[in-house]
Length: 304
Image (cartoon, rainbow, N blue to C red):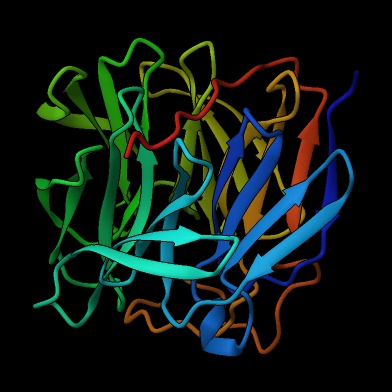
């Protein structure tokens, strides 16, 4: 089968982000991170088998989600971890995060294979290293695990759980850490890949079953596959410039879903974004890639 890129939903997300394929139910969840700023829904769910799409609106920016063992959600919202019940739209605060930093908000996050949710913050103006990485354990305790970050993106783990990857988008670097799966701690930070020579910057990531990291490169519109040594193995040009995150899905985990951003006004102090008057055609849509012959790994559920 030849590679095919299709738009599966023209949802015009202001900031499409955080796709999660829940293998137990065969549905895709994703976010419109800043959708509430323009009156858009914040949480989205699609059942590819039936074509059904549902969404929910929040009064917060939302950076990341994970499915819980009970089928409900845990969210990294702008200033804290929350539980969310899709049946009632009820929010329950677990723990506030970085409440003393009005410019920071929680951004990207993922769950490790012991059920811990790790999420990191971003400076809303994408300028100052004022944010950290935080670990929410199944017992609902919260632990800081890193600091000095401008914009957290792309947290994910190697298939053997020994390496944790994360990018600081506007430093143009991916970092790799040794990861202790028994304790959820990080050590031995080093540069995994440098995107300083690219027109794009790293956004959301996932890792495939072969141990390669896939990254949605914001601004350039390239979906980039890195081998385990940090070398670019391939680039796939997407139909829109501002792609934001990536996730394997489908019954065989051999499809790739890619979110994107329709936002044209950015609070950032830098000038790396295209200065558009209106969104690029198709921007903010959800895309799907088939025909790669590569499989992903099932996303764990949050253990709490």
